[in-house]
Length: 129
Image 1 (cartoon, rainbow, N blue to C red):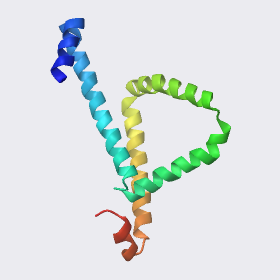
Image 2: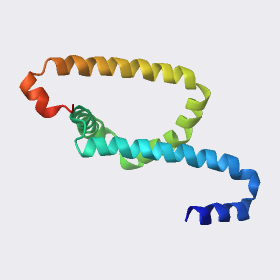
Image 3: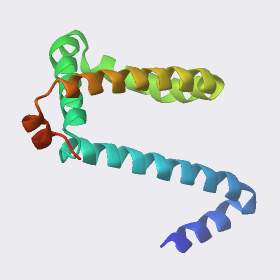
Image 4: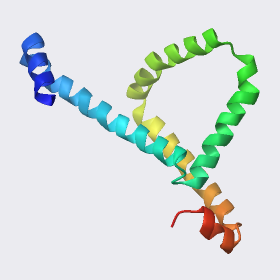
């Protein structure tokens, strides 16, 4: 079926769009794999600490932020973010990557500190090897 889609794109748009289109398809394919891998780790409890962090975040959003935002406001914010975040990321990619790397290091340090305080018998049961 991949060849059928590729043939129909080439027939409709010609070869000029092919390199750009393949680049975007490849990027979206990797993004989709990353998202599904993350969701798999969260919902199938592959990483218990990640599942707990996501559940705490969703609880916070549901109980604290939920009553403050109506559905149409949330829809507008999602629409606005979908078109502005990629543009901002392209313009300031290195700065954003550095900030995210620093945040990830701090989160990993906090998680490691918390897991060191868990007793060994419990740690073996809840944390993956």
